[in-house]
Length: 347
Image 1 (cartoon, rainbow, N blue to C red):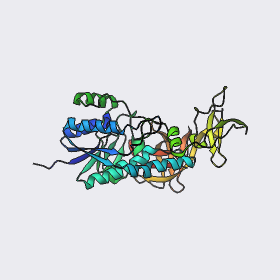
Image 2 (cartoon, rainbow, N blue to C red; image 1 turned 90 degrees about the horizontal axis):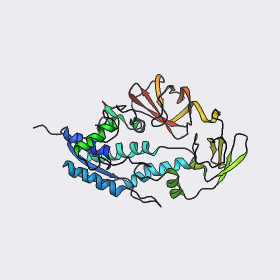
Image 3 (cartoon, rainbow, N blue to C red; image 1 turned 90 degrees about the vertical axis):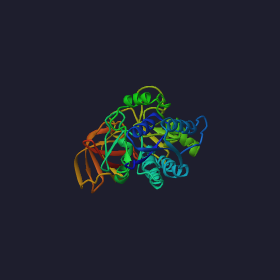
Image 4 (cartoon, one colour; image 1 turned 180 degrees about the vertical axis):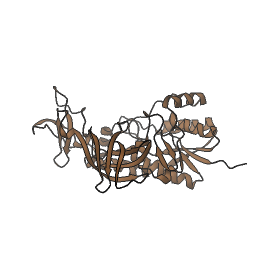
């Protein structure tokens, strides 16, 4: 009798990971569910949902008759994800903690711990495909999560299964009902990865305390209002400025040293649009030549794919059309056809 492949599934307590485990068991894998305890701290006015999520993950494991474990990565998550995120905001940039969580926790810490524990592979409920160590876009373009996975290594993808890659979200919901899973009607998790429904501003206030207020300055150089901390504002932002009636204002820049936020009512303002930018912290799943043409780039999750050229000598990305609201700290992720090649962080 052939030995079954041992797969450790990251069970988050949500519907996607639950269906992932159910499908793998149905396909004949030796499945173990693992709940990653990455954050357990309640914030003022916001309860961390980890206990509820842990119990839901455990219930699914019982329903499916699979082994269940808890991996505690709370210390590492704080160091690798939360501290990074807070430092980036303090520097005036807009980071993506989900990308860092995938790079450092799910596809490094979890993968290494699972393999050491006897697993042959890991699996997660991401909407993506992995083939021969490469990352491919999911069938459901609305749910495709390759943007968040571009910093994961080819070696990690060669040891990862993504059973939801050829399914749409409605199909996953339907399968959850067919399997009779307790998470079938559970809502999508919102907010910061693993922390809960708390918004970025509330989280930063908890981590750093109240910030020094400063001036909001229009493109005529006039102070037209006050902000409650420049770290809370990002390029292209429209809401939360509280600068009175008339045309809406958009953030076009900020000076962290002066604690000033710069705004405009002109949607054509040069500060709102970019056609060229430099990238840093480059990571390639699939290596690229010095100047790559025929590429497409995505600069935010669910953002449109835009034709681009990348010059590896200068780490410069040139776009075929202006993109609004490119913010330092965000990621630019490159694609060729359905393959995600990698990307970098906007300077």
